[in-house]
Length: 458
Image (cartoon, rainbow, N blue to C red; front, side):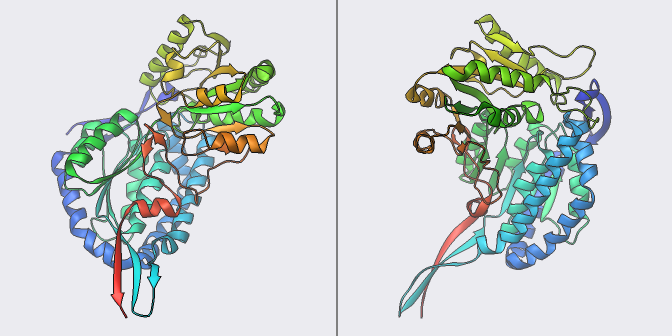
């Protein structure tokens, strides 16, 4: 039996431990077991499912530090950031538990003297949940917990980059009183995930690259099953001439460089009014250079490493392409000296043109390209100049202008000034090649359901 080798990208790829890759037989057995369990799990009802899943949250709380430490080691994430993110995802579980019943309750659509009509939200069946490496615990929370609450059974595959986080999740989930087959986990790379989705499942829930998402969508079309896909992003941030630069620099920094820039919803293109571009770039340069890049297990570290050497190689090729076409480095632009591993300094680039890969491709790393504009129409055109449409930000004191622009940007979320969209009650997802369907909130729960109408004579 072959194995996954878990390494630490912030410790020069030091081997942590090994995990056995799931065999074809194991995958098939777990899918069969999930199918056997789906009727029992459905008929328990939402209240009972909440009751069974509640203690799992408490167990995860006691293991929060262990989860954060493992995530930091396997992904290179700075430990302080890792702990904060894990605690945030625990709060999301609480929101899901607190709101599942109201989101999934029957809804009366019509009533008169002769009849009553209602919507019933029923589970779809067996769900393949496949998640990426950048938020190993968080993506489990997003994909698995709402599905279980909605009454679906789940076969879960975590990224091959963080199997140890997956093992800890599996240990917690299987130590509680869930019926056999309600939750199971498999391990491996993309080929293992592909075998899973080809088996007897009813829904694919996937977060990852657009390329893989499109392949899964084609497969789902052939199988005629539903998908929920949260894919790539190249979020624009529009900065107008009336902003207070001091008030926006910290948010711009965080939205681009958190988790070393490796999130789908990160700010990836900074579009700045020409009149304030020099001041903003200087302020960002100072902010970036004040941060410490280094050992991910040191609480003083602000930015850890990329997840793997392949990510570093890809990022370097994108930056080289930009430099070859005339881009200018303001700060960063290379790996730090005397640190071994998948490290790259946070980088600010100017003189960006639309033929550069750094503009047209998703950049999964700590680099921010900056381009200027002069008119509102030009800013909107630049913002929409992408195959992606996940999120966006608008900075301006003119709220009417902000609302006007928000209606014209093609993205699933628009943040105006310092109002973050990341609330559990808000649905999340994208336009264009950023995916389809929505996660979180009431809408997110209902994406995971069959919608049945029952009309009854009184």
